[in-house]
Image (cartoon, rainbow, N blue to C red; front, side, top):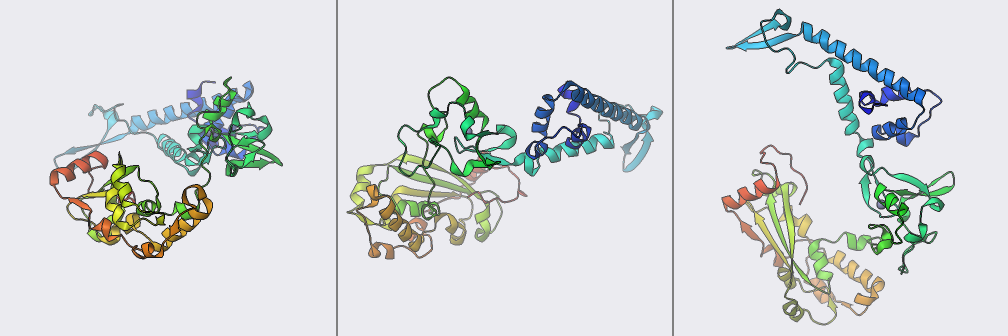
Length: 390
Ligand SMILES: [Zn+2]
């Protein structure tokens, strides 16, 4: 079946042309790409019927274009006066070039645009094997019963962690496993599916079973800001340099939070100097360590207000305390010997940017640097809609 012919049909037109006894799953019916794949596997009669429908539509569009083109009235401007003239009268040369598309063509373009940007098309799924979230339209997921996964032994971890939850001996993402008709199935991305079918004895490159399993991040740790992370850390191998700049050149400092963008660079640290600052097993770290491991530079004419940066650099005393208590219990290898010190905790703000960070933020207001940042990362558009990228 010539694909370029059938592609002219919308999803509704394809489904309408199919015989009622041809049943596509609801998942397939929601996506144009999957429908076209399924159609490609159907019998010759069905493909012939679809080709006829597509050909008829193509003929109708062409006839409509000719009809509209012949009678089209072309707008011309002479000075300030608008003149409507008939293109068929021959007084204008614009015939095919920049011809106005027919209503059906426009409607079909809209239809294809809606389909290409619909929620279904943008839908994403998580692969059971590699736990990556990917767009369905690109990754071509397939549901495979657990007992039908090819070369299942390659998903058995060599040294499973005691907290890892194995499924039939395989290290999979539990939340990405479903059940159809009481049969458990895994959802595989095309990359993992292809890799598992190969003759290799190794797990797929991005499989959790390939030493990439980390487990779920507990909420108490997941909610920490970067300064809070640093305050509960026991080792500091890197220093973090954060460079922020305003997405828009306009805006009041109090409202710039939604219009900040930036990047983080990391550099190896002079660990000996840092070790000297750490003492004993008391945690959290003293806040005066923060300027040594975290540097912030803001590029813009006006420094944002403290409130606008609070979401990114805040330190919450209670959150730090809860995280340390959790780590002491659940990560005894590295935190079992620590003492959660109330004196240290009292040095932290209850919910604010520590003065040690705020007082050391560098501010670069040089026009040339501002222009470089604007040109390098964001569109130079004064009316750009702010995004929360900071
Ligand atoms: Zn995968």
